[in-house]
Length: 154
Image (cartoon, rainbow, N blue to C red):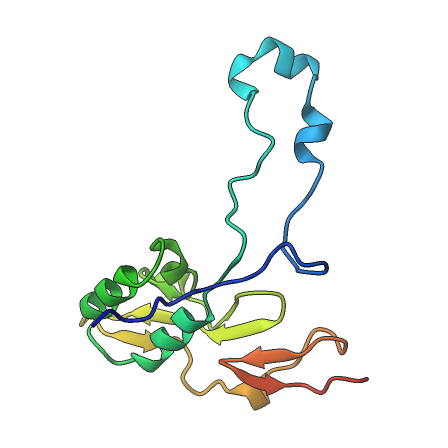
């Protein structure tokens, strides 16, 4: 039995879909003297970013496996993903990379995770919850580990 993937495809062609992209970078450097002299600077106008994927199911999967064996969790997650990088948006392998809260999306926050010395997946700050969080603006709906926080003014 094949398990469901840990990501969803999102329609990015719809008007108003936030893509977190900056435009005009290539346009402003094209045909400059530096580029004319340096052939290695020429490249595609298309960015290397991958649009149209929502990894919320992955983040929920990782949170549900806290305390489990990292090698098993990682191998299952990678087998159900299109690429392994999104795992490390939330999980820190080294102590200096640990973060209590990770922002993954415009207003979606998740607990930061790390791998301890016994190769177990752990939460950086297990006492942190949605009631402790403050939104940076009042116009958006903010979530922490899937739970709403702050009040949206309509």
